[in-house]
Amino acid sequence: MEDNTENNIIQMPRIGDQAPEFTAKTTKGDITLSSFAKDKWIVMFSHPADFTPVCTTEMSGFALRKGEFEALNTELLGLSIDSIHAHLGWVNNVRNNTGVYFDFPIIADLDMKVSKLYGMLQPNESETAAVRAVFFIDPKKKVRLIMYYPLNVGRNMDEILRALEALQTSDKYSVAMPLDWKKGDKVIVPPPKTLKEMEERLADDTIERVDFYLAKKELVG
Ligand code: BEZ
Image 1 (tube, rainbow, N blue to C red):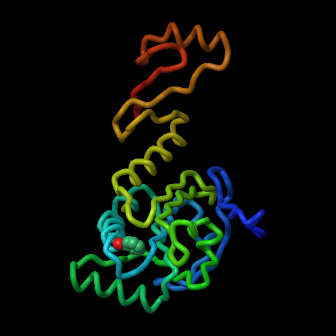
Image 2: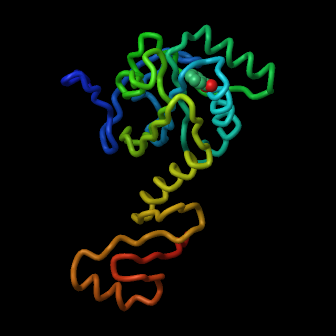
Image 3: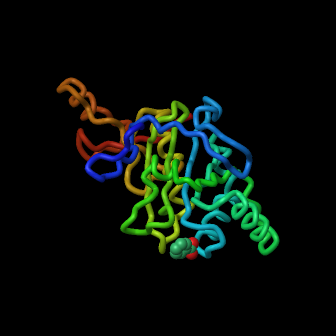
């Protein structure tokens, strides 16, 4: 996205958009979005500030559950508008205090380039810190799901992982995910598009059907 302001409204990436390209300094060296492996998902998340309590719990949550993201073929990428020096001090401080190590890149977005590009700065919430955003970016670098939380409410790691797995399962099986779906639950089969398909759906006894437009099935394989 080049010109991201129009009538003073920040143009944020939306679901389905190509994730805006950037290069940034991180705790693991410089990174460019397009250089991430072509077969990986990316969960990119911002936090308001290093050395703050809610952020420490959230970043520890990402660190402790990094293996679950890896199992879902997903790289973690943090961001705040703090410096590399602050990030390193915080990572070391949390490790010394709790034994939890933030072993994923954290962008030092001092010039706010990336946070502006992704609409993470929401001035009516804070003029000096990024809100708690989560961008789910698929292997084609398309934005697939966005979460925004305010400064005073931490995110839910179970929900972040659930949403990631729901997206991937939906893609893999061309199905949709109902309320509160989690791995192992039935999934929604796409509604029929023609009368013929509707009649077939109504005659199908292998699915759990409320009506032709609402039916669920088990996933096999
Ligand atoms: C926190 O992480 O605790 C926090 C950060 C910025 C503003 C308010 C709370």
